[in-house]
Length: 488
Ligand SMILES: [Zn+2]
Ligand SMILES: [Zn+2]
Ligand SMILES: [Zn+2]
Image (tube, rainbow, N blue to C red):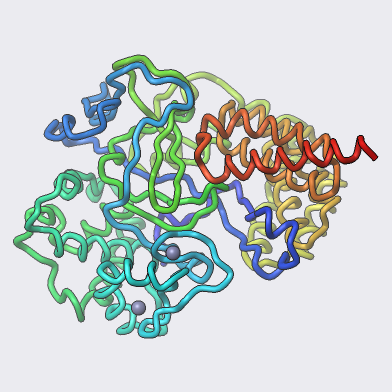
């Protein structure tokens, strides 16, 4: 049983880092990861307003009509403005990335020091290992007790949350209190989901039994989750996916105050991360009193599919403007249905090849589909875009740079169409394509692509984010190379 926030959505990105593209160490360390959107559940029932005043002055808690609690702007907020910054109450590296990322600072490294006891935790330095110890101490014993099994991300995160609560219960911190109000949605879940959560709860108890044989009953912050089931329900419903600058998943974390953010299929804010620190940024100007929103799900999908996902996973019906107006669906389904249906039906098989890193077969299958049925469908077709994206990923993995850049370039106008700017997904796709163009010495094209990327990333990630500073460096390199070429 996998945890729910591990469900893979469409939009998979392969880490395309400067060093890995230009350096020698290309193949073995290019991890395949997927972009998981921040998952968070609106806190629909609670109307307490206790700590609006403790939040950053740019936003406050309020009761949003029909949505329950929400967050709204207290002042005028400009496009690209950083609205809120916060560290997680608890976090952990996702299992898929546990060999590539320092478990303390969340940076990627080729070699990491391994905890000699649990053999799972990994650190970039002795300093990180030392810093991590207070959070890892009890976890380490729990991990050892289950070896060689490693519990799912949600179970490890829930355990870390309990350890954090136990060590700070006397201080009564603001966030612990907020967590208490979080929604578990246990009453409105389907039987199937409840069963899945029960399995996770059983695993949690097993995992914790050495260190915390009984969940604490007298801790105020845990009073609404005295049993493992409601705790795990809260965690899975409210945790956020922590991604790197390139929007690849690294871990999961709980950021209680931001669980108040409601969903919109065309949100006015985005979340990006630096390490485990969450940055909430506005992607358009906001007036005082306006509600702040993020998207809980992949927005590039049909109206009906988005609504279904929100219902199933977050137990609410979306009434946002995009959901209420007939929008892109027709365009996403453009072309001969008999042709795109073939592409649509091939997707599960392609996803499977991808999950198994069977790149050669994947690239061949995509190529075959795109040169037959795909030819009869316009680029805007959603399923054609998905196949093209998978062809891009596979080509990168195989070092087929010319093919990769062609596939990548085909996706750009469609990304532009479906991810209204400034959208981080479009920005990151531009960076990837720009890097490929640069690697193939298409310098002018690369610079142009990087410029487009910069216009987006300065808003979605900000000028100080490492991905933006890297991008600015790449642009400088391009300019220098162009000067060099013209002086020859
Ligand atoms: Zn580190
Ligand atoms: Zn350990
Ligand atoms: Zn919607």
